[in-house]
Image 1 (cartoon, helix red, strand yellow):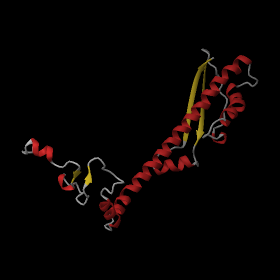
Image 2 (cartoon, one colour):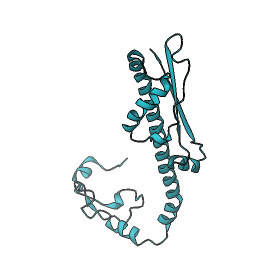
Image 3 (cartoon, helix red, strand yellow):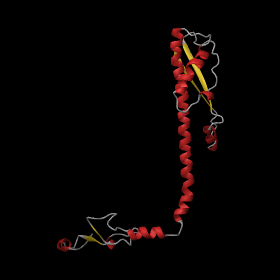
Image 4 (cartoon, one colour):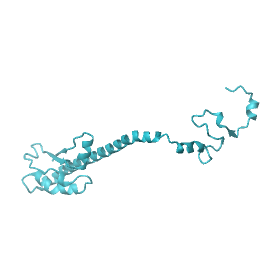
Length: 190
């Protein structure tokens, strides 16, 4: 603590603070500044910024070379994961929509001998046309599902979405992921 008497402290000039009054923390070239007006725009430490611009030691380049690939990798990984989750979500929405539509087909009497084939022909194209990520051509054709609905009136429907040859499959391979096919199912009681 300071051993100066109170009167000496009170009479001391307080409107200006010198850079030497504080530890330097690398800012030893900062000019004196007024206490009430400290910050950029007041000429605060412009000498340090100027020296940084003239520095030719290439430390910023080395840091960029170290961090840029890592940040690019993380960005691409986030994109691949987000796109994969969006695809899974839309495939799940399609299968749930088809399961809900099966209630109307059963109550209205379906025209073909198999409920799954009718859902694949009539309902799936309408549902997929409303989706942003999935494509109808990549869905596996709906095959017959004999015995559906079962004796307890439960109807289970499964769909498969093929990712082979897509950009998502190629990007997943960069990360060692085998994103070849998404299969989702939905069960509903009729």
